[in-house]
Image (cartoon, rainbow, N blue to C red; front, side):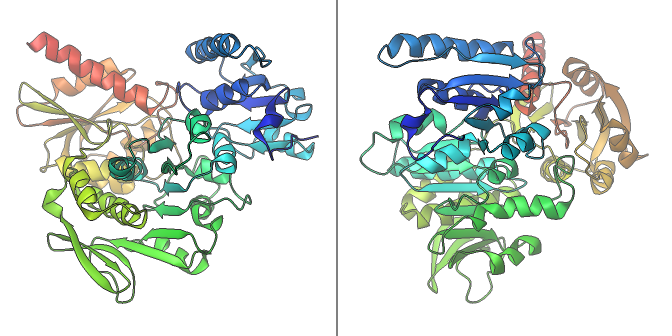
Length: 490
């Protein structure tokens, strides 16, 4: 018998399996476990990673268990049970609820087993959508979703300092739900939603007040059977909306533009690098002007040269965030001032600095070929780049990237992993390559092959699984190597 989710009070004494703990201290798995534990659920936390791999995450959960036990003596707080290195059938069939981490495929035999046995499967995002009392603004896309989410959040923060920025951006919104439920005035919530998180709200009838799709490129084909299936998952950001809610789409991508005819929203806005078609409302570039058209009225609200963010892709991110902020009630002067100061996020074409005339750039979140190509376009000057790339395969083609590497890179360090052979094959004779089994080895090789005026660019174009905990760990290790070199050179 599944739990009655009509009230948060029903979690008290319920048996709940959290499937997939993860390694982010405020991520979906840990965030869900903390929230459920706080509300009195009897937790089984299960993950295919073993105890050693998840040691820090387990310690984090137990720290909060002790804190909740002490601070809430009037409530039964249950010590969680950990089942690591395996999944056990009874933890999916004999429980009241399964909460699935987005890293777990919904085709998992254990997820399917739970559903077959009448056990409800939720995620931290679906639970948040269910109980959050305030408007939710959501962003998805293959690229740019983290930057757009953060930029929109910063625009909203000027007006509402407690604006919540969460989701796929390494923070579960359940971390904020309890204090939000105590607020009497609306607090804006901006959520970055991956395709996997969107799948968890399919069929729920709970869509965001504003949904933004930044773009759609081939990605995650290790998880999805086809590009069409991946696109369907992205489209879910609109499919659960009500007609009065707002959809914001990329007018420059035909595959995204085609979605407009099949979404429920009657309020569709567009963003484009060039002039919008007559009759379409949204934002676009006209020379150096950023122009907004709403109800046929056009307003110049900022300039391209105002943007602190660099790169053509970031102009699109800025446009998407700006129209969403306007529709959420943020005045133009606040939108303008945020565009002038927002410099982007760590690990996204992040310039770390120069050592001995060589620039180091951390683009660890460039996990698709298109992401790497955007970085090469920004920093390349026809052969000045030493690229560090490769890793775990996502079933993507590197053919176009290989051509661009041949034009912009003098040397490529390829991480050992399931994508390494395909990566090198695509590069061919375009650049000299060498393999590396660690970040320290990769940076050492890169530095040995760089000279004054060159750029050492970490932009993998692949997943991080295997050698690193996640893409952020990969970026952190690169930054650590940069700092070591800087200290030695000084």
